[in-house]
Length: 198
Image (cartoon, rainbow, N blue to C red; front, side, top):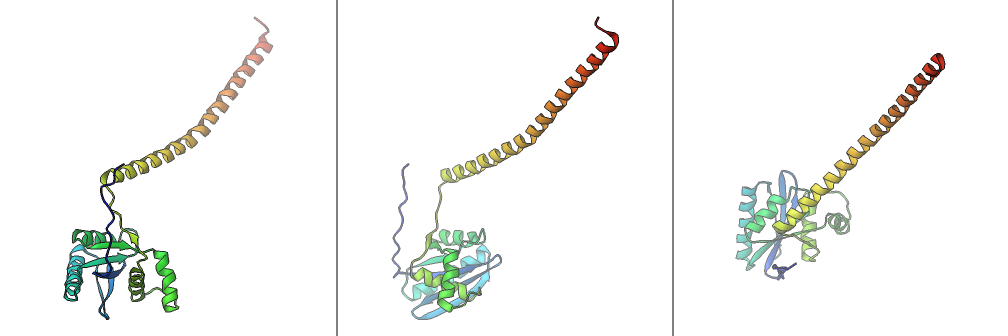
């Protein structure tokens, strides 16, 4: 297999880490530039996400930074709009491990309670330490292979389920056939005893 894409080396001095706590309907942003802290919230919609990210990029350019890196926790499917928008606008994107965020929150604030104000700060700190997971862009062939594997697994489960349904019924039919033969033999035996051999 030939690999055509190579991993990009990110110069952390030229980018601004935008930490995002993702929820179903809202996104909570946090980032720091030159000692100033910025925090904001917006709806989890592509148009509002694009406006916010472009506004943050403008702030970053004013402070001499070239690019943004969007960092968030993978939360099922809710982060997909954010990551797709960031990729479309040519910004870097990374995930941060949800377990790392939970443990680091306890270390940073000595409190295990989850709040919308704490999590973006913790994600930002993990981004500064470069404790992030790469956001993978998977090729079409690999996605097709994953879908076919899922279909194969579902077929295997269905076959096993059908086999489990059929075998007991086969056992019942064998039981009924055996008893029917025994009954016929007993009827023939009784008939033979009454009338005698022919």
